[in-house]
Amino acid sequence: MRHTSSLCCVVLFLIVPFKVLAEVDAATGLVNAPGFEFVKSQCTICHSGSLIVSQRLEEKDWIRMIRWMQEEQGLWSLGDLEEPILRYLTKHYGVSVNLNRRRKPLNKNIFSTE
Image 1 (cartoon, rainbow, N blue to C red):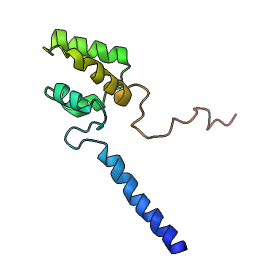
Image 2 (image 1 turned 90 degrees about the horizontal axis):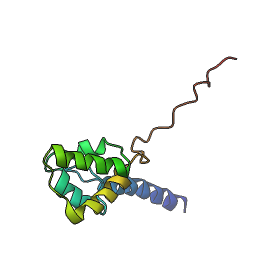
Image 3 (image 1 turned 120 degrees about the horizontal axis):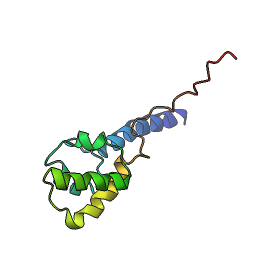
């Protein structure tokens, strides 16, 4: 019985990382989730997915970024695709998303001797 439990743990340990890796598109580095295809087809024509991944914006700031690209960089109207693109960007690359996976900084007074 113990041997079977160990084997199950090893199998789960191997499967979970592959599932996590499968959620990220290898070509763009973007999370493969609803809205991904729209972002891939509309955004990665001009720049890499890593530029999107590096941003952490609220929805209003994503809108501002899109408007700037339309006014200054020649981005076309996204039409009906704008809403699903904004949902995707806000959900996966918003300010509350932590892809860093690091712990929060230590309290600055932790080493205080007072």
